[in-house]
Structure formats: C-alpha cells, structure tokens
Image 1: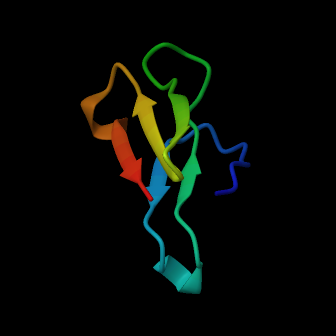
Image 2: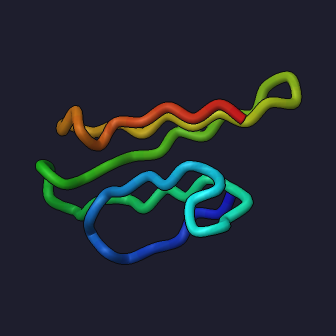
Length: 64
C-alpha cells in the first residue's frame, strides 16, 4: 500500500481501478467535517486499514 496525496478530498479506489495493482486511499482535509484518519494494522501476515471520519461517506475498511 502507498499513501500519498494532497487533494483535501477523501477518496478510496479499490485495487484494479485505472490498472493500479493496489488499493489507493486519499485522505481528507484538515477541517473536522472533511478530515479522515487511517489506522493501519499488520497482524498474522495480513494488512488492514480502517479510515475513520465524522462523515459516513468517507469511512472505509480494507483487508488485504
């Protein structure tokens, strides 16, 4: 997984979108209404990510 962006608009693109071989998470802005926080966990050889947000449209869970 790679995390990098500066668009201030939260988005999640599943693996395979536009030919990308991995999922892409773009973080939200710095205001409370737009902000997102990603929690990455690696357990038992599995990577998971939870994106937390006050906005239900920008909450995601990824298990790879």
